[in-house]
Image (cartoon, rainbow, N blue to C red; front, side):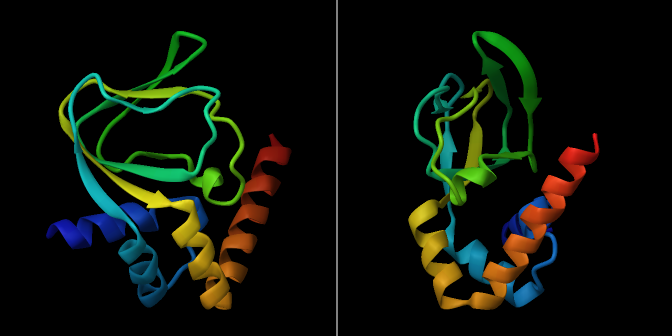
Length: 138
């Protein structure tokens, strides 16, 4: 699978983007950029304002909250999608534990896409509503 196709598949797995068609998904993909990361690099810090969404494209990362490990992430795993919509403080710190790379999607560019392509805005709102329904059902 090519790197570009893998990124699209990673995006398609994100609940917020699951209902986007191939063309819309490609528009979201074009906003993101991939950057290499070294083991030990902090991607996001608990309490800091969130303004980006991340997908681990290679390597591994550890998620800690209040100093305790709560999850380990690998290729295809993502975090921070709600920061695209609301820049609240991060709930956890994410640190690379192995060399790799991440795809980063900045909030400002994502907001511009939502204004430029209302169909994507509607689908993202619907996906967010579905996510809330699931959360409330638990």
